[in-house]
Length: 212
Image (cartoon, rainbow, N blue to C red; front, side, top):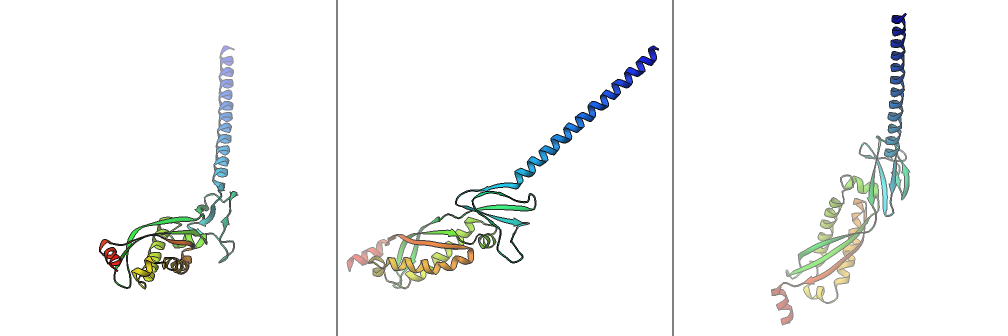
């Protein structure tokens, strides 16, 4: 009888152990499932803030509404995306200011001028900007824009004399590069303004001007 009772007690403890393990396994499975759902939701929801747009890519390619159609662009607000498959890049579409350091330009008299300028620009076509600037690199966009504006300014200043530059021709020199730089739309951007902040004359040039 004693042996029988011990055997029954051992069986009961084993059943209890199996039941407890089953309960723990179920709890673990529920916790894992909840965690997976939370991770899925976290990776599906994103926010586009004011002054931004979200561009969707699939495997580093711009996602489009239809084949060859308009790109998928998200405006400010809460949005959902397909996790793992879709990536969203947030782009700042506010006006950007690009300051240029003082540089030397040559007039049609082969005289040097030292000029400070700046450019204001903004993203106009997010998809084109993403494609042409190596996945939306602002520094690459500004580097290419700087070279373009610099070339236009050199052309404009190279067609004028020093007297023209220091006696009221500056507005015309500003406006023409602004219009020509509209060709920067191939980068998906629009140039809003180009300004010459300051024109300095090298000492030898300054002396020759005042001697006149």
